Length: 123
Image (cartoon, rainbow, N blue to C red; front, side, top):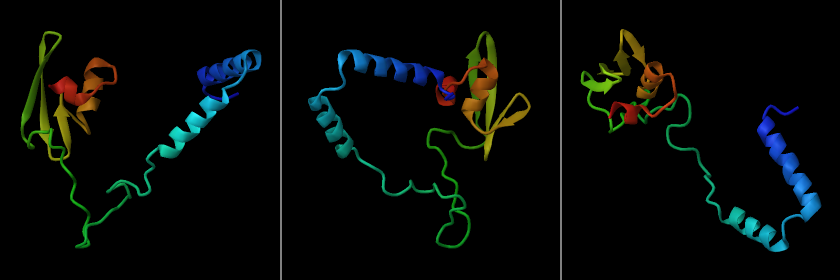
């Protein structure tokens, strides 16, 4: 049995409906084919996607810093549920509550228990 039960149920329902009511019209099939042909497909992987990418000088490529982040050493302060939270920006990661996290989203999850956008949470 497929691992995605919801997909399987929808697929069965679609098939039952297609058998009872009729499948897609030829016009709908042509339009879907047109849309598929017009889709922009990426022919090359994004820059830096290759593991171990190096710069032309032979060393490891410099890590790009997100322009939304303040410089290392800065402290982000946010009030959440009546308490003040402080996160220190490090060279590689963020320090919060005696732990180092790789991202602001990981800190937001540790605080709230739910996945969320760390940049929005820290704003």
